[in-house]
Length: 221
Image (cartoon, rainbow, N blue to C red; front, top):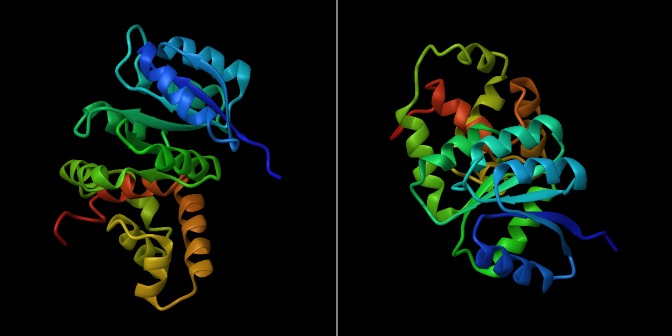
């Protein structure tokens, strides 16, 4: 039996922290090892407790979720940060993703989906709440800058890897990409790993962000 995923809950709202702890504690596959009330406290506890996943609020006093995410990943890069917020169109969310967060969920996400998301992120995958994936992509697309310095990094990708990156940017899963390219899903996973390695990125969310920021993928194309 696999050990439970160790989770640190970060939120300045006492009731929200209590609610998250109650939901997560009801599942034996998750172990809430600590709580924090702001970003400064979160960074200190993450370094001491070494959780697998940090559930991170974004709007907090003293140090917000963006700065906390950056600080946590600087000192404990193996920790995965999952942003949980009330605001679908919160600009802080995009900052948190750029700071290295591995995903974004809304606080109204059903308990079973929250627990599933924690396991997904702990396994090294990345995710966005389905209701906001399009919003994130559109936001990044507006910032696309053809000829940006990072565009040279994309030149290292093979033609097939560029195909996979484009489909990632359209929000496709590995299974959907495999179907679109008529290849095995395992082949797609290999391509994704190579894309991340060549671009020096943590996960597929940040590969998509880079693709839009450089203009490799454009809105409506």
